[in-house]
Amino acid sequence: QVQLVESGGGSVQAGGSLRLSCAASGYTQYGYWSYCLGWFRQAPGKEREGVAGIGVDGITGYADSVSGRFTISRDNAKNTASLQMNGLKPEDTAMYYCAASLTSRCLSFLDPADFAYWGQGTQVTVSS
Image (tube, rainbow, N blue to C red; front, side, top):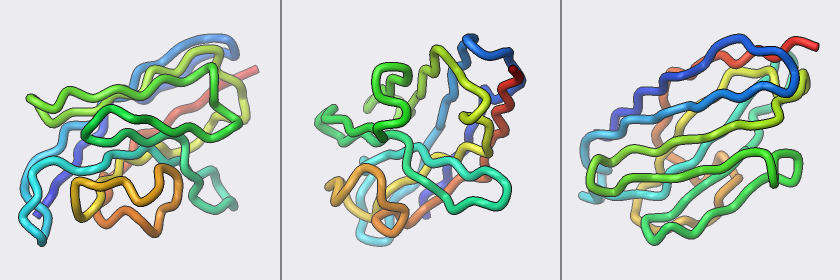
């Protein structure tokens, strides 16, 4: 079973930066060790939305709202993923979740329905 542990959340002022990390371990139910990894966020009263995703091959996808400000990366040897967030805005405030797919393929980068495993989340708060 895949386990995901996020870290790196916190509180910053608008314009600041944070780096989130996700440590993945375990095999999917189909026996995959490497999987598509994504970052999602959910603000109070809102639906969970995709932020960025990255395949085992390093191909990435971003939500329009974060493109140019956020950068996702991964280390396949360590099975970790990171999300570098620059130019943070108050509207980026949310609980951020790391997610993993069932196989090594990325069906999509931003659709929560394509991810089967989820971390507990880490809070990001951006003040104006």
